Amino acid sequence: MSGTKGKFLSFLQVLLLAFSSVKAFSFPGPSSGCCILDDRFGEFCPTTCGVATYFGARQTAVDRQLGEIENKLNHIENETTVTVNTIENIEESNNLIQKQLPDVYVSRIREIQGEVLRFEKSTEDRDQELRQLKSLILLNDEKITHLKSITQQLQARCRDSCQDTVRIHEITGPDCQGVADNGARESGLYYIKPLKARQPFLVYCEIDSRGKGWTVLQRRLDGSVDFSRDWVPYKEGFGYLSPGDTTEFWLGNEKIHLITTQTDRPYLLQIDLVDWSGEQRFAQYVAFKVSSEEDKYRLIYGFYINGDAGNSFDGFDFGDDPSDKMYTAHNYAQFSTADSDNDKYEGNCAKQDQTGWWMNRCHAANLNGRYHRGGIYTADQTASSFDDGIIWATWHDRWYSLKEVKMKIIPKTRFDSLQIGQTEQYRGDH
Ligand SMILES: [Ca+2]
Image 1 (tube, rainbow, N blue to C red):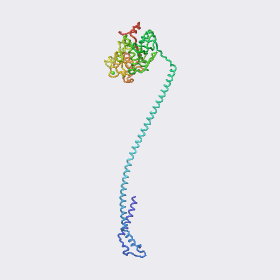
Image 2 (cartoon, rainbow, N blue to C red):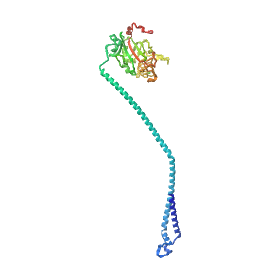
Image 3 (cartoon, rainbow, N blue to C red):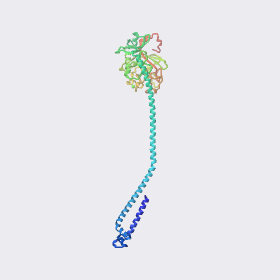
């Protein structure tokens, strides 16, 4: 571009020089009569004079045009300078951009790589979730198959046993000893009606051939019934009564209260225990009774009379504190449930151990504790890190949960009269 511009400028300069020379020569016009060398050519003879006249007539316009051309040239030159500067600026900018571009690209590429990695990670996570869901589906399919099989078994049993196979004996009495006294000689389900009861209710009676009739208040066998219940279920009773002593239940505090307080004659409470090795032990308390709901079904007994399981109801010295035995004694303790805290502890023993029991702060015995299979259990297996098993601390440690429990009562006098000949079983000083 600069070469073309240079040639153009050189040409204009020659032209200007030519005009300047003509002007400086100052030819006289035709009116002065000079330079007519040949008439045949008239006023515009092809001589210097003719040319001079011609130029003379047009000099002013040409000068003006030349001036304009010069101005335009100057303008073009200025514009050219501006353009050159602009080009230089653009080139500098280009250089700058070219220097910066790699960083921008590298940064963008890194961002894209990061996004790709994140996407891959996300895809892996989704794959993992899918695998987990598939295994869950398989597991659920197995469970569904298992449940279908159980349903079929139950349906088959329902078809067979639509008739009532549970036999409830007709003999009745104020308690199971009364039932036995009225002639019953086999264990099973009987209706009894304690003196103050408004209506009879069903109980499981353990009756032997010699006429001893135990009224069973509580049964633990296999952990099939949840003993983590509130006040009302413990008041009314829960679980299942069965004619063959094969199910777990709590008879109910109100019923226990009605039986044990119907007369002044004292009841004997026997607690039968079985551990996970199959060993059986027992503990007996005389003058056992449970007070009214107004008094929160308080546990009251006279004393420990006999047994080989030890006297946990009187508390146990765990070795943690000198007051252990006093604070874990149960006599005169009110009944507590998670929703009715009547213990002597700043916390809530029953809620802590998910049970209903005559809590002090808290216990050396808890026959309504959680069912831990195998016996030995740890704090990790409990809901609140406390000993919440089926405990009788004077036999097994509080971190050992018993396998089977039965709580049963019989009028003390009837027990004594039927024990004739067996008094050698009594041990201790009672
Ligand atoms: Ca409390």
